[in-house]
Amino acid sequence: MTISFFRRFAIVLAAGLALHNGAHAQAAVYKCVDEQGRVEFTDTARRGCKVLDLPGYAPPPPPRASAPIPAVRPMSQGPAAAVTPASFPRVDTAQQRARDDDRREILNDELRTEQKKLADLRRDFNKGEPERQGNERNYAKYQERVASMRDEIGRTERNIEALQREIGNIR
Image (cartoon, rainbow, N blue to C red; front, top):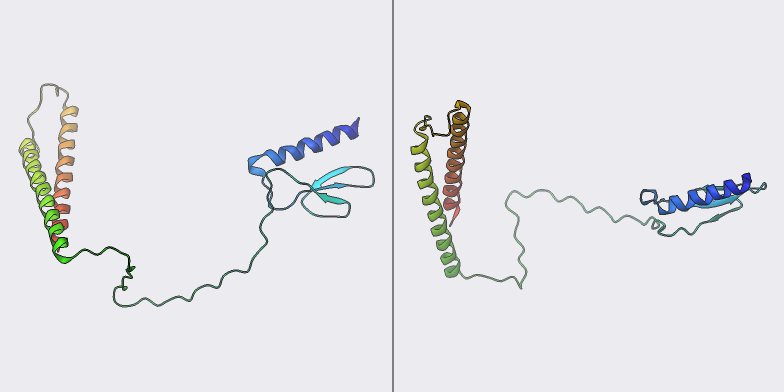
């Protein structure tokens, strides 16, 4: 009775380990039977043990010689030379100038839109005291709207600065 219980337990344990996702062993699993017929599962090879072929188990690859570490190149003082493959498409100067002009025009349009938006926001903000609306009987609601207006003004100012920087970066 006890031997069959231990065998069943060992088989269930081995199957559970084999099927468990987190129990992928890094070494082989051995089934060992001693002189009294007791079964033991281990990860070390001993006399009387044989390797189990577990489904889903792939032995780790043998260690290989590591590749030599490349020498560290000292930092150069100037910018690194860009390596361009021969098949890389080239754009002639006139076409690039036209693209830059289109980009500048688009950015200028966006800048004008943001500047108009900022003027409208500042007009509505009324130097920190915008007109109260009918649904703002509660002073906290009014203050919440004033704070969101202040945030929106700050965001719009940052957008304008970014657009001006971007326009300045165009060649």
